[in-house]
Length: 514
Image (cartoon, rainbow, N blue to C red):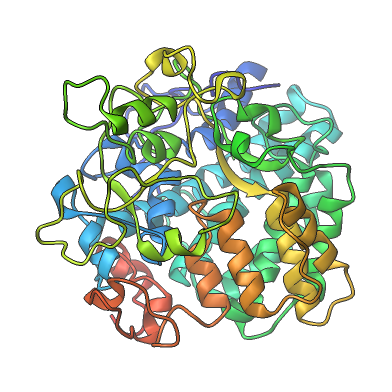
């Protein structure tokens, strides 16, 4: 059962504000009556990672799961920013780490997490109620585990970003307000449920494209364990390494070329390849103005000139910039400098200025280097010699990488740093060897954090990494515009969690400091 174009039926409409998925229209069907309709319900869970529908935000792309979660991991850290000149709401407070309770990106992320948890729970309930008519017992176990893993992904982001929220399960009554859990309760409940069902997932070698594999489930479990000390106060490094063994010992391999992991043909690496869990994007099938469209079209610009020989225009054409560009996303100088001399530095400098000292007079035509890590061309024509930018599509054809094998390798290095016997440093050096870098025999915490940035930059991990390494809040590490000051300023510890959006405060309460 593959999802070429992710199917979503009209069987459920939803109001994410109150987490109620009961249709208000009495003519809307609520019970599946065929295997195709059961499959459509599962497709709706995956569609929730892609869509921007159903939220009161500035545009549909703003509400997509991948876009709002990317913003809350990257724009609030030392890798990128979006200027007010883009005229989209909510970015300035993220750039400056001064958000409150009324930011649309926080609202979108919190809503998406809760909505995915709810519809996954509804699916689990329906699967066991109606599924025996269409599936074998083993198939039901695998589908049940699949939905639970998608729900666990939603809970993982809820734990990481907000630290408190509703505990939603298949036993939660529709229309009722679920019990609010604190961070440790959410962690314990999510880990216990995922751990109990992860072995029922289909292995990557047998799973179809676009769907969650057993390796992806263990990767998510390892991510929770990786940050356990932040989430609960108790480190779980051995448990993290044990979960990662189920990922690295199953035959998955690193892709031979780093840059091809982020181009329009990267689906060949998704699932049973380096991209352990990817969110599919397909022109004319799975399109969104979030995801990698946001990271290509949203990041690039073509110089405003009629001169076809303009050197920047020529170079951008070679680097597969599409005709439609938004010129919004720009890189902070800290990221550019961290990648100097590294073969993974997929950054376009052109005639731009690396430093961005004055956001009031910021000009996207002169300031801030451009991200070109994500492209919309094929591996077979990466530099766009054909000149058509993969059909000049308005939306990206590049799958968004949630979890990669290289990340698993670097997580094992971190486990070894904390005393676990897991050959983690050897795995770290496999990541470096792929791009021709010399091995590091005994990497320090600083070197491991640096390696994580060079390998995983702009993939939605940076804020969590800085928090785990003790470099996010306070003044230990400053970056440009941290705290709203160009030279960087200390930010209080409570900003290691986001504010609960005001739309949910009456239900789940508020985090300290807000």
